[in-house]
Every structure is written in structure tokens, then in C-alpha cells.
Image (cartoon, rainbow over all chains, first blue to last red; front, top):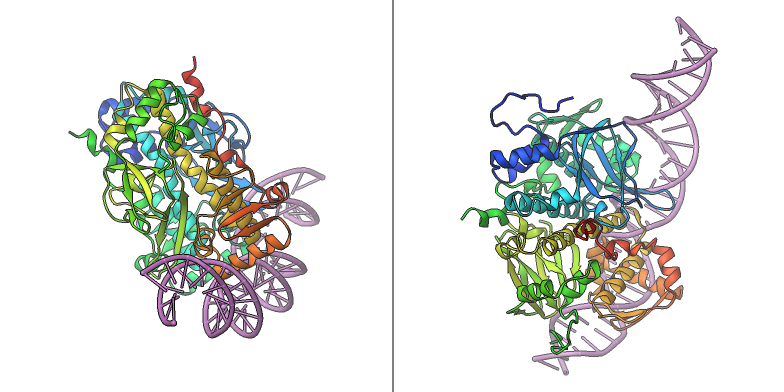
Length: 257
Length: 257
DNA sequence: CGTCGCTTTGATCATGATCAAGGGATGTGG
DNA sequence: CCACATCCCTTGATCATGATCAAAGCGACG
């Protein structure tokens, strides 16, 4: 569902991945065709199933076409850390699948549509499409920036700031793939999972959300989050969205000459 | 100092970077020559100077040849999060420099020797040396794994586990570039910086180190750390070193056929 | 010899965890 | 259609991990 709704459109960025990469640097029709080809023959994965299993070996990555999935690690005593939330357009398996044995588990939070891209196909882009390859590999490297930002949050932000930051990140990322409104979106995680992502207990996440609501910064109706005072929330969270996007991928400038 | 000590050696992995990449997959003499060339004309940077300034624009990355540097972010109110410790052989500027404006600051902890590698030169490797380019870009992507591991630590490990994990990571990484003994190394950070890396206060880091010493797991003499009971420390920290290395870079297998 | 940077110590405090339990929803099988 | 189960949110009480504040010791270095 939702896969290429406007099949007839002349040069629309059709898949979420194309859409995302387009935000980094303009793509040629040729490159878009290559990307589309990479995402052909998608596979359906049901809720709660594992997309990537820790310890297994993989020969490629997955592109998430629709749905939401979670990268996580469970420690021996059951404590869990959610490393990242993958939204449509995200690539699953970086960096976990770059190792002999996958480092993390990725589970489908909702039913997902994914397309497998073997490493061979990625590396074969080097020669005919160096610019596209560079764009893709830079976006892989940027993965690290999202983790770094989470690290800053978990390491040095208070619970309130963390939750606020998380909400802003979700809003921004969902907007980037057209899944959120101006100031509202549907929260894809339970409060327990938010806790596991933010290094907090369920109860404290709940408490914190109530605090944000009491302060009039946001409101919650079921899973529907509405940000009431965007500026105040941004100030509270010290949110700097540049790490999520940025118009022209800096390093790619050198292809323009 | 320490740069290419054995100039005459026939096929020694001479620079720390070559050494590191060699651990991922065997390099041809040709590829080693290219790497050496990338690292020619190093620049000296004094202690405390910034190698990368947050907000500035960069057109390449730096390879750290010798010395230690810190990637960090300072929040508006002065709280600091140390994101990573860069050791010889590490590439500085991923992912921070992949943005229009650098996301993080990198400061030299000791005097450093670095070599600048413009993005153009990296991308020019695609065509003549696809295998090498793949190795380099995969190692960039793996950067994310180190952050993810830190995230797990800061999010879900106790202070004791965190400090233990940090010590083990330093030991392993320093060994990889020949800067540590079997079970001892020189700690390149002050306790305050360790705190900023681990999301702890200075005093508590101190307290925790004393606890580890009292339990006979390690001993400390000035900056010299000695691990007394490696197995116990590994068990305590739930340390899984595969994220730091791993013999054959999984995705590169496809070049072998 | 004084100062600066770092470690150490101790006392007090607060953020956020844990434990325990109740309360809707939604779903499911009898 | 109802009993029951499950999943998730919510509330309150208590507890502990680790922060903060304050200050002293201790080299090294100019």
C-alpha cells in the first residue's frame, strides 16, 4: 500500500528512498531509474517478525518501502536498547549487516514492505554511476550522525529534553517522507519502546509526556501527537534539525564541476 | 614521530590506517600505495587546537596519523558530550564533515599529525580501485556501529559497566594500532573527559574506578591502566568486541569472485 | 614558590528507577 | 453476547543511582 501512488507522474520522486535522496542532491532521470530498479520486487514482512537477526550473516541491505521497524539490541539480562526507528525510505542493515555476523536485530513494528539490495549491486554502481554511489554511501555514513545525536541525548539531556527531542525528530523525519502534517503525526511506538529508545522507564516516559502536556507544549490523542508550541519545544530540546537532512550533500559539490 | 618507522620494509602495513584496513581485508601492494599517497604531506596540529570546528564547512576528511583527538558537542548551557575518541588510523570528519556545516567539533587531545584527504580524491577511487573504495566507505559506515555501542552503554548500562566497557574498548582499539600491551595501556583521557564520554560526573567516574580497583579488576598508576582480570571485566561489561573489527569485511566477499 | 590542572574525599540532594496495582481499550473463543 | 485475556496507559509509593556542592591533596610546570 502506498507504493508509487502516482505511477503516471512525469518526474515525481516516487519511492520514499528516492524522495529522501532527492533532498540531498538532485537526481537525474537515469539515476532515479537505477534507484527504482534497486527497489523492484519488494517483499512483505509481518508485524513483529525479524527483518534482521543478530548474529546472522547477510549479503545485502534492505530498503524499507513502507511500515516502521526498530533496530535494537537486547542485553543478556533482558534490558533492551532501541537504537533507531526506521521509517519508509530508510535503509535497514547499516551498519549491522556490514559485519560477518549482524550486530543488531531489526524487527518490524508494523507490517512492512521491504526490498533486498545485495552488496554486489551496490558496488556495481561505482563505475557507471559514481555520483549516485557517492550519494548512497554518504547517506550511509550519515547514519552515524543520527546515532551521535541520540548519544548526546541519552548522555547529557534530561528526561524532559530527551522526550521533547524524540518527538521533534519523529515529526521531522515523518514529514520528510510525507507521513506527518505541519505539527502533528502518529506516534509509531508505544511508551515502553520510547523508554527503551531513550534510556528511560515506561512509567517515567508517561510522566514526562504528561508534563509536556501540562505545560501546553503538546497534546496526545491516542497515538496522535500534536505539537502545540513548536518553538518552545525546540528551545527545550535544543533541537537542531540539520543532522537529519540538509539540502546539498556537502561532499557531492565536487561532482558539479 | 612514529610515522612509518620501517621505511625499508617490503610489504609492511606502515601507517596506522593501512594497518586498520588490512585487518578488514587484505590489500594489494597497489592499494597500499594509493593509501600511502592519500596520507602524504601530513600536517601537525598542537594540543587543544581544533581539527574540525562545528558549523564550519569542509571539503574533505582528515586521517589521524598520530596522537589522540576527541569528537564532541557542547550544548548551549555548557554540558558536553564526548562522542568518540579518535586514535591513530582513524578518519576524522565522518560523519560531521558530510554536512554543509560540520556537526561536531574535533579537538586534539595531544599533539597530532593529520593528513587531509579531499572528498574529490576519495570519490576518484571509485573507478580505478572499486574494492579499496568499498573498503573505505564500509569502514565509514561502520563508524555508526561504534556510536551505537556507546548508545547502548549510556542508555542501558550502569556506571560500573560503562566504565568497564570503556576501558575494554580503549584496550582493544589501542592494541589494534600497536599502542597497547597485552593487558595494559596509557589512558589518553582525564577522568573528567571520561565522564563526558560516558554521561557521568567526574566524581562518579573516580568513584567507579576506585570500585573496579577495589574489586581487583584493574589497577591504575598515573595514566597507566592495567587490566588484572580480563575475563571478569569482559563479563561485567558484557563486552563483545566484534563491533570494533572483524576479519573479513562481510560485504567485500563479493569482490573475491 | 605559586598556580593550574587533575584526582580524591565526603555530605547532601534529585532525577529517574522500581514495585505494585488499577484501568481502559481491543480482541477472541465459547 | 459475554467471560477472559492481552496490551498499553496511568497512578502512587518507595528506593537507589548517580549528580551536585564543597574542599582538600597533589604533582607538574613556569
